[in-house]
Length: 145
Image 1 (cartoon, rainbow, N blue to C red):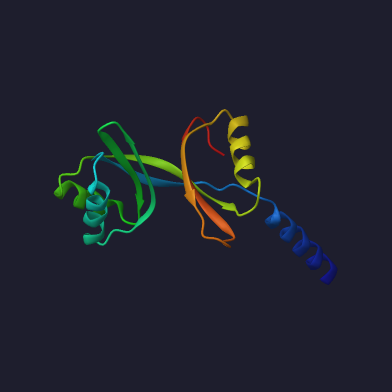
Image 2 (cartoon, rainbow, N blue to C red):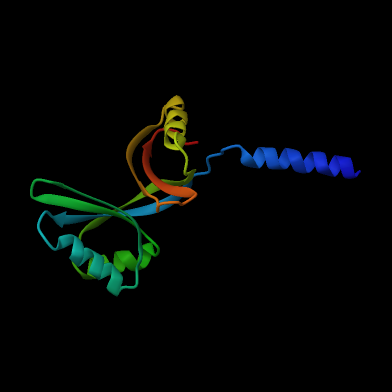
């Protein structure tokens, strides 16, 4: 019996070490901002004053306009605060996944998505130096893993 338990434990450990992708859906707010100094600071302060934490951010501009794509810890509170401040936004859904901090992890994920016919339309991530995992946020079109 002890030998069987050891064999099962080894099998479970072996399976748990294999890299699996488990994606979670998260809400993203895309806030329209003018391309001028202070607009991102204003949006961030509106959210901070509402006790909303930004957990992911992608800011971009094109000409006089820009946008901030934010994932926050409380979407409802963020929508209320942005609306009260007159900051227009749209709501969307992204996929969030943790990747191991190793060379090739993103290549492996992107390759698996490509084989399924999934296009990565937008991706953002960051990872502190020495972290074991990164959290990647993806806007995808097509089937997911």
